[in-house]
Image 1 (cartoon, rainbow, N blue to C red):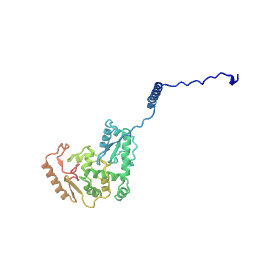
Image 2: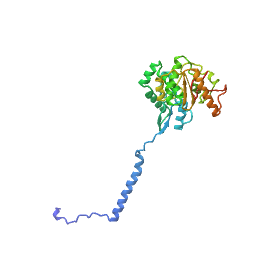
Image 3: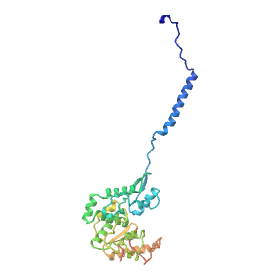
Image 4: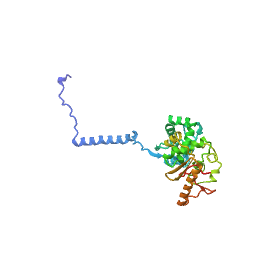
Length: 307
């Protein structure tokens, strides 16, 4: 039928939402969006705040055993874990060290996080030692004294243990160099303390006679390895000792170290040390079994013993 003959039909009316219907529709849409967010959010990676590192301080003069224990505590690991890790840790040590990091666990402050491992921390300390100590000045100084860098580190560790304060390090170094030049035993109590795994002011006659590679009373030359972790000042003193002819020294009291070129002068200083010690009373802890305590080196009262 032609269009002109079709009856007129009005266009269909669109249904219009009431105000209430529009509100319901909006709330439903918001609800769907909220549910989608709850489902999707756990699937998206969350940005976590970076972990703030804790600080692990390794002081100058610490032995490797002390460093191992500190790492165990910092990482909350069973005692002995870090010491065991040495065998497999990637440590860039000189061949002379034979895998023993003593002397190369550089004293500094190291960052520690939940991701830190004993092996990584030890490797970091050794790398730091190589960066700080393997300088041209150290290499040239070692060569000038006929020493290898490892021997220089060993000498520096003795200086670190023996010097009462940094100002005395150059003189202590000179005493060691002079004794080595004369083929005299070093007679350093710090080496005996290392052998006996202790720290004391008093060394007995029996102590000086122990059969041990680190007994520098009975054996000439430097100890076979470093005895602690030396710092930069001790390394500098090792390669650049203060000029002098001293062969003896003893710290009579804190801050008062007496250096002597002759044994007779040294005996006078030792007598002063004995007098002050007697006036102060007996030491807090008993000396090792053997002869009465001798007045010479220790962690504070330092110097070759009067033999």
